[in-house]
Length: 296
Image (tube, rainbow, N blue to C red; front, side, top):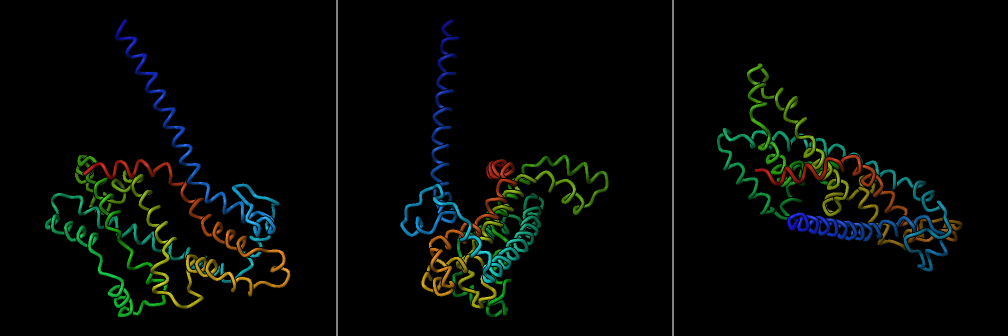
């Protein structure tokens, strides 16, 4: 009887603990969404409310004029195209390089494995610096090209180590059975290993995609031509140059639109692809990060 009472008390405590966690996580999630909701509300509000700075997380005087203005600008489409190209090409190439690096390093029979891992960890901790990076890009004639925002970031050591750890946790018996059946290393990698690594691959794909999409510093350092600007450069120029933004408006646009609303609409339009991309991979995200980081 006493044991049943203790178990019942423990169950109630567990329920209370879970309830409190849900409440705290819900509040935390809502707080993280407030900036996005505010930007969305500003971009959909009437200009008089935007100018008076009275917009919260809900639109006031719903209208789409800011988005019509943003989507009518050629520079916006140009920077959007450049960013999509960099993100798609960079993410695909990065995943190929990362997988082809992580797979052999996950095998204990690889000669010089410990030394190679030490080199990767050393290069992850100690960065060459801004000036050497710029000089290298200049020597390779990559300055003011989109490749300067892809090639230096093809391999993220941290992402590679996570995938390597995940691969080390896979049952070796599966690969041994495939070898007995006559499958070569390439067939084993693409037909057996990669499908089993789908959770961690999806997580790393998201990491790479977000990194390429949000890369501002190196774009500012390597890109100078207006036609090759990325979306982050376009957003930065738009935000810090409110005067220039007003000069680009026609008389009607100047009277009916607020620079703050235009900036908010541009920011949300630039963020939307990542917001849509994440839920697709979210079901793999937690599993990939948790398992990949614990094993090894």
